[in-house]
Length: 283
Image (cartoon, rainbow, N blue to C red; front, side, top):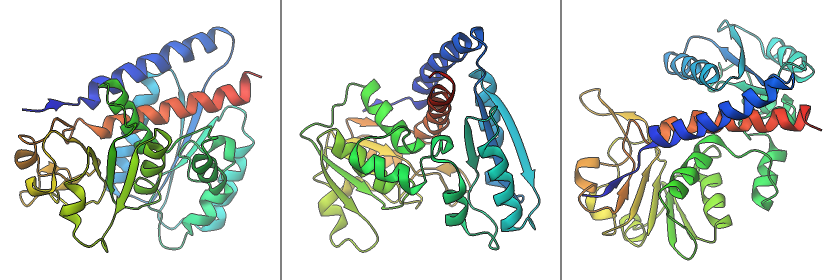
């Protein structure tokens, strides 16, 4: 059986590190704060937001919650963001996606001050990631890199394959692996002979959003398999992109779902918020 990469345990270490730092800052009169905005009543988004508030409490970060109705206009949301941009209590601003159809997500992302963009979605922060001169990293891809590091997996010289090319996970994940000197292949819905490519991967990261999509015939024996997916199977049970029961006997390392990458996403958000506070308050 493979080594199970325990995201819960790794995230607990990250949170503890953040807590020690926020407590030290608080002793010097500096309080770290994040504003979380949710528009509408998307159940999955509400769960994520609740989890983020709990994480803030455990990390000594002050959390400001803005729960707006579904019919909120784009202008109203922009005005709130503008107010938070200049609120000294707020180091990070997070707008929970997706947004209702009347609101242009691109406009909202552009409106957040780049030094408060703890999701690292703003084009300036994306450009910084491309160049390697970044302040914040997108939470999920950075969480993946922390897990790899914790388990002593060095991407240098390895062939890493990323399934998925989203702006939130796939593309930045490929860049972070590239910065660590992996040889990176990005696969997607138009990729021909997908299994042939994934079978060559020393490190396989799946962020495709399809339940049990990655099967045993797609994995190289001994590979590191990182499952970013959060899906429901035919019985409504939470599962990842990887068919765990099939793939686990072949893999060298594997992340479970739940308990793998998910906890790392929120832990990294806490790290990013702390980084933002240092930018603003520790000059």
